Image (cartoon, rainbow, N blue to C red):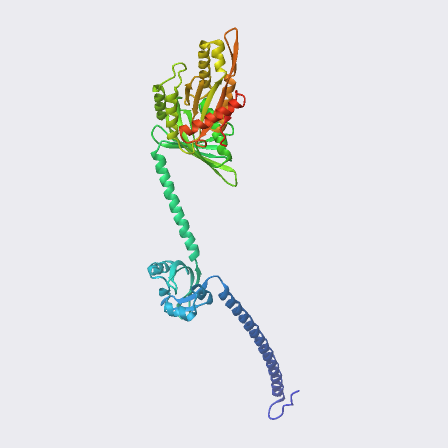
Length: 479
């Protein structure tokens, strides 16, 4: 409690002084309390600031890439963090010494003018700058840098760039490789287009899953057009456009290509715009994915003139007087020539055909009926095989056929058809002789690449057919 106030002051003045002293005591107490609260707040803010600085240090050290700050006016490097030093594999002193604390010298010489112009252009409109440039590192290797920077303006008027730098050397190498591949692909595509425009081939591209066949061919003006045929093969629509004698060959080739990836050749006839059949030689390839054929492509060349020339040569060749077929010499030459101009992946079937019991026809029914029997066998062979196949009489009752550009399945089917067609009874009205035929088949180039080798293989298969009881066919199988 305060002491009483006495002296030369009035009692009222004493009361006022006493009240003032009391109020002063309260204010001192309030001041002390406010000071304590302020100190507590300052301590709390200091702790938060310390924690924020710790977190910022951790961020600086562990963020991808690195950090650099430099003076926007002089280019002097002010700060680099450990992340940036790790990119270049050196200590800070080495880094600063190597690049002389200059951002300009940090950038590779060949890129400096471009980077300077880019910074000036961007900073006119934006506070942020993004660049890509090369740096010659401490071991003289090139490091590609992605540079993102923000302009900071200080109170004293100075300007500082705060930069985040990322090493993109590996990404740049991948980009360059992809660019090179794309450029090469572009060149190949353009070259293919030029080749495509320069040739008259019909181009095919078949998507197995959608059963869509894309066909490209030139019109009368020489302009190439593509058209799509939906439900192409699975509905059999395509086969309707192929010559009836070639449809089974084309279907067999398609079925084979649908099962196993590979390349091949097939010849067939299709009508032109005037409805006249023209010959085409199709080189094709099929491709698989996950053991399933997904696509087939092909290029078909018009070989009508070549076929007409072959027909002319065949017509001029010597013919067998009785049957009109090629004689032995013409047949041998024609087959040998065909084999010589064939590719290794072509498939041709050579048939050796012998008439069963023909000697009994001559002995029992006479040579006149024997001659008619030979003509019957020749006509039967002619009707079973295509008019473009080579057919010859090798002498007596023996015949040869070369079925070019076929498949084993088609060859076997033709052999069975010929067995069924020839199997019959020959009679003079009183007596009769049952005839049939035995057939041996060998394939180019599996069983032989020249005439002599292929002939021996087919002849051995013919012998096996006769040993099996005649009236059948056998396909050569090497022992």
